[in-house]
Image 1 (tube, rainbow, N blue to C red):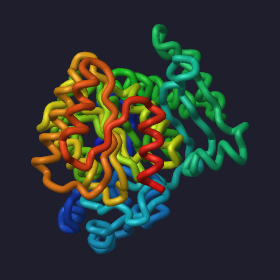
Image 2: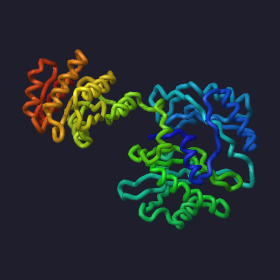
Image 3: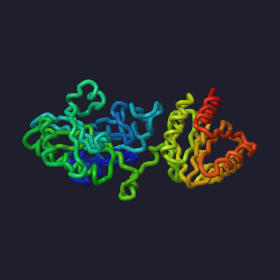
Image 4: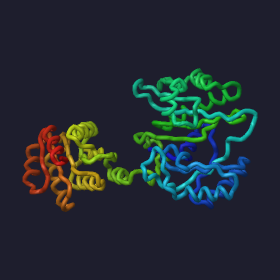
Length: 396
């Protein structure tokens, strides 16, 4: 589950990570009041207005701007709220901005120049260890840094059974070229950040930039946080942070119906039971010359109502040219699934795209007979290759 910047910062701050303070606003008037409150609390004279959407690169799309007075706060907030923000991480249509974060200006003058760093915490699946990735090149796309100057990216792997050791936090600060107060502040920052990552059950914490201020404070100016959906039952307060306005509406509908659905850019809809079989089915579609339009796992209870819901979800995508149903009947009987498909088809009326059904397992022969004798525009298949050939035929 992705979070907005302000939500990610709330989690960071709860674990002792220093953050750029801010207040979220839904309207230009709220933005002005937020700016006034920040000025009273922090003494900041300028404010940064940040669009709150689930996408990076907001500044490049005009979603992050500096306001030097309250009039500019109101004007800029009015321009950003309601706009469709297009960034390198959104579709060409962009994402609608429903709220902005009004933050304090942390680039104030002082004894030294502010410096920006990049830092993220994530799982290195190759080693089975958590990894702190960091660089002196903050404020830039880390992909560009990795491609053009890979020697400027450092990794600190952490054994989950041991946790982050003090010498590792100090090594991060040393590799960033820090000393004195800034060195101590960075070691504290890294320790708190890693604790936030592990105890919030996150799959990603990315802060770009981490700022060393002119008076050697270390703070998180941004926060991109992705929580592990499978661990949300342990964090009811985090689950309440979900903003379904930022999510694919079909995926939201599927989740409410208890189905595992991921929208993809393809032309063949998939209905499968079991994640492993779903992945194999997607490979099958690719082999047949098509592209999977979705990942859809209906689980072990493929009754008529559940199948009908799945069909409706798939057919919401206008790019779908065919549907492949691939069910293995282990716990659930194939004839029961077949009857569910027939009943769902009749309830929905005419379905304009071809449907290929492959049922294997318990009572597969009875299931094929049910499909073949239904009188509906549904083709049955027995073998994987037969299903692939029929997908290829309808796409040709």
